Image 1 (cartoon, rainbow, N blue to C red):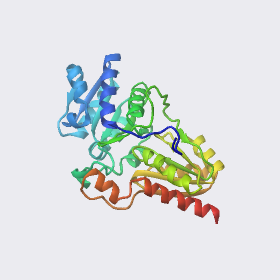
Image 2: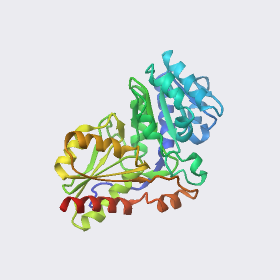
Image 3: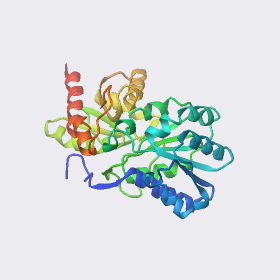
Image 4: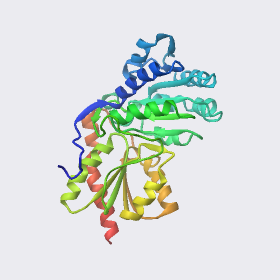
Length: 322
């Protein structure tokens, strides 16, 4: 058994695929579920819903702003509406409509951004969404979710459908490691502690959770016991888990596939500052846009891997020991 416990981390499906599967099941469960897409349905996997329920699927063309407003209107009319596009498009192009037609009236719209982060790879920086978490968190009343694997995505998409209020869900293009077993329970706003440790806490979400689990083994060989927390809900964030981690370990490392300046780390640091200040380190995308390349090349070049998680955790532990 590895130091990271029961997590074998075999390659599974992409989280965007799990989103598509969840939509189909929701469509079967509830006739009020409707879906809008911005001419990317085969990439977002909303086309599966469209094939099953063509009368509840609406292609809005390459017009994310219009799509958001259409979805908001459907939500205001009592439908459980999902709108989906690449995260860079739905959040950046649709931001004004998200603010005015969704956040301000607090309509029950579910917004899904696929192909998030730099792991989109070959499509390049114009389509790499590294600001979406920060933008989504800035929208009043929005719940913001970033699941880490197929099982968590499926469960959290279904939970979001029955959650009262606007939700942004961030999913990715590439296949990711399977962390959870089918049937695992997920609660919006409640993080999941995956490993225990008293030396440092690694807080992450999305595809970086698997890298954090890989890092646990390396750190353990160095005598560093790392706690790993999957912070799948960024807003509202699990303040209790963060505060407990700060008290128990005295050092927190946040790793994410997002701009460091506006992502998960900022929200974790706010809680730490307000409740129990401790040593903190941050790793994510720096103040630049990534280059085009295969997902593997891009993730390696910009250090979205276990090695970077290890180094970030080491820095936190070194600072704590001074």
